[in-house]
Image (cartoon, rainbow over all chains, first blue to last red):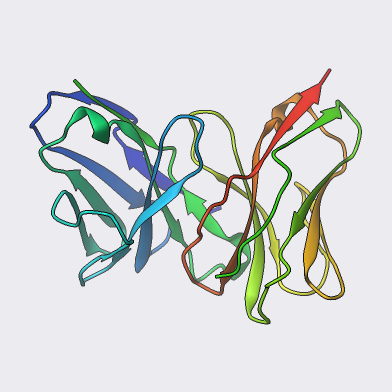
Length: 117
Length: 109
């Protein structure tokens, strides 16, 4: 089935630095990918829709200058958390849909646990 | 996209069937009903989805009410590995998935 690989699985960074998270579709092309964040014991919150070759669409309340999304190819989207602060510590998850296999729904990455110290 | 309502939590015995309900009274004709589940510290996993007719796959069955205002995810024989948060989500074809609170399923051995 469709596989989405997310890297790194966890990262610790210092406050004020930037962190890049990669999301790759391994066996299919994804013109659209989605980024979520999840705080402990809460549900997933959609942050943005990443579109290949164009600007991302951010959900209301998500700072586009803080969470930079680049979708430069049909198999790779990146999320960069800029000038990270402790309140950005969260579980970040990406997903994509293989439009060529309409019966398989959306595939999610395994998530990235970001801790800002 | 229309909202869904699920119970906060449910409990089941191992090897017994589990019926997870979902209400979506404001569903539109083009909304697909999706079910995903999430284990702790993992990304969500696709379970099943449907539009109007009941659906079966190797993981579960999806029973959709005739008026489409509710649906039920059926796990035929719950195992300890089925303990997870189950999300019922409505979305139009190809659209983003917006997650609600979901149902925490606990499975007792």
